Image (cartoon, rainbow, N blue to C red; front, side, top):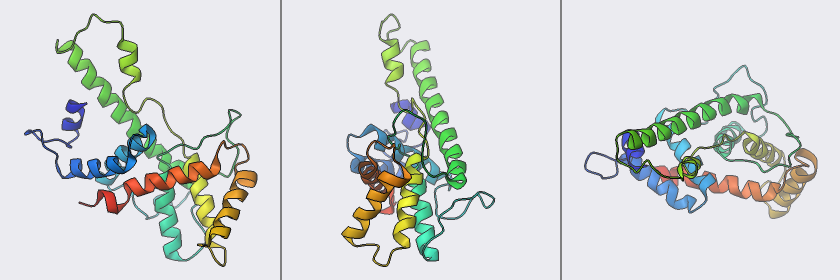
Length: 221
């Protein structure tokens, strides 16, 4: 893992944190011990470095971007739902049921590419460790080591769609910040938009925790 972080520029040659390393550390401190949120923070930092995580429209030909509220409301929804797409919506094993968003599917393709590239680099760092004789090769836990590396499985954009739908609905309400309005919107999401989600309100809370970890308050340099 140390070699991986050094190659990605989070650790310098003196074994200290770079500016991006400090940003990553702040985000991981907010994430705590939740592996899913930790991975989301790491991918977010990588996308920020490439200037691919922002509120601007990127897929003008794709439908189902945020549509309600003011221009600022739509921009904030765009950014927050993209960040939420770095996590996962828990869903019953019957195939996805719920709204779709080609806009978020387009963003998800970049997230998937990033996760796969990071996983490939992790595996190459591990392979180099073994081939260079820097680790014991005669062992019976190789599968466990491989399965323990980050970015093993892809996520989907279901959580991003869930957040976009939630924020879009709130933007059309006369009192969007009231607890009653938020509770009613979460209930509507559970029963009408994502009836086969396992815990829609809980996943919304997780999405906003990802947002807290990725937001400028934790990653600002």
